[in-house]
Length: 329
View 1 (spheres, rainbow, N blue to C red):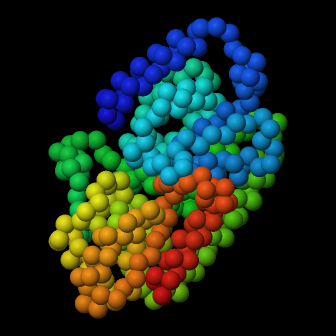
View 2: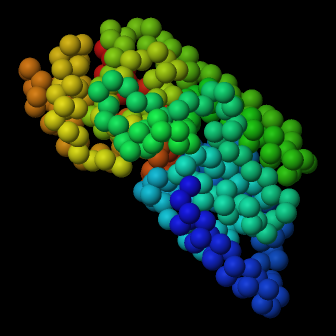
């Protein structure tokens, strides 16, 4: 990761350690220390954890770090973020380039018994490199990899339902270790959640089996590699999943427009919060210029409003299923 992050985190940790050495804890801080502190960097981890925790959370302090519309790819950690991670009993993070700063913070953790779960490590050999498919605009990182630089993995592992089940097991195991007296409750909650994930997976399989087309075009970034690969859906997109680009070159637009014509597709897909400009330009360059735009939700960002409205990993993935059902029929 960037050396800048390491430098900033070192300064923040120094300040925090100095601050912690001054004076005694307040009464409120002592009360907080009795609770199990869990930090999740993004919404999917947070939702899996609160589901497995169940109703009895009186002794747990569960924190979502990147929220209210913020994006992990551009997130700048604050001193309070570093302090929260440093003191946490359990840290759940993606484990890719975007949150390398979390690992840097954990190296200087105040909590010597801290547990952590990296999503990328948890799924093992199921992790894949950032995919560059035909027609997709390459970034400098891909050229550097060809020159022998470190491999960049696709971080969006939560878009696979099977990955969600694997990681949920890891979370349950860590919760048992932290709070063994509630092990039976955690195991029961995990079993119920696994059943719900399996049911949703079967619904995806049925949708794909009944689809009239198995190809999609995404006029945007593409954080859906794990989802599409899980159900053998062919895809074309403007940029890789972690791309910061917002404007596609002419060749990319024409290529994607031709794919819409070639496969007789009625939709162009985008990610959440897209301004849809690329998708609109692609449609303008098709033969009929009558395609519609539909959006998939990658859960990279979530607002407090949506969380309060009751959004969950399952509800969002169910919504994505309905979108794909419309697009592929």
